[in-house]
Image 1 (cartoon, rainbow, N blue to C red):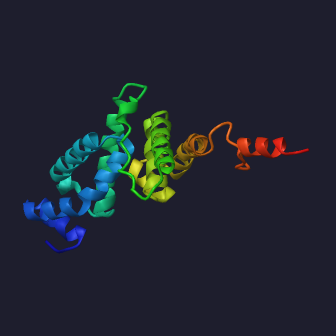
Image 2 (cartoon, rainbow, N blue to C red; image 1 turned 90 degrees about the horizontal axis):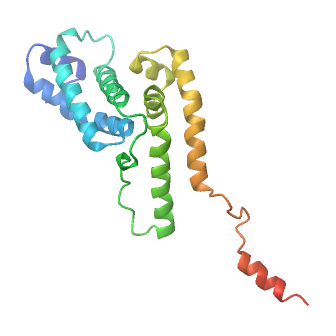
Image 3 (cartoon, rainbow, N blue to C red; image 1 turned 180 degrees about the horizontal axis):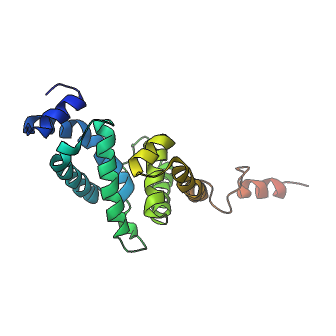
Length: 203
């Protein structure tokens, strides 16, 4: 069903189920990606988004169009994800880290292994953040949202959004760098065996 979000939201608030279905089809893919990045579990992401749409359907009469429908839905999904993250045990199970996409056959095994290690490191790093820091990091680094949008979506001040992102960015970057540059790697890329062979040929 064609139409902009505002018009569809008005019609859905009046009980038009077709209009609401159109909104679900339009926004569900992006919201599922957002929730999966926050929760690290496709199954939990589906539950979160489904619950968010059920909540949105019930609360549509409250939607006044003061913000975009997409922003409103993002806020509902983020709040649902925050509640789910807060209810988890303190240490996340590494089995909950999403499996990376199947590697391209043209990619070398070493490169594929490095990508997998980076994905695991990212999941571990995010699991060590507080729910609020994790949500802010995902919105900023993976969704590309501005600090202003993050603050509006999470329901915090702009200053609080900047502070929440200070430590997580450095923390996650360090973990990913550790994978990209393993300890003990030769920065010059020289082969110790080759060096030894050359020295052995010296008179």
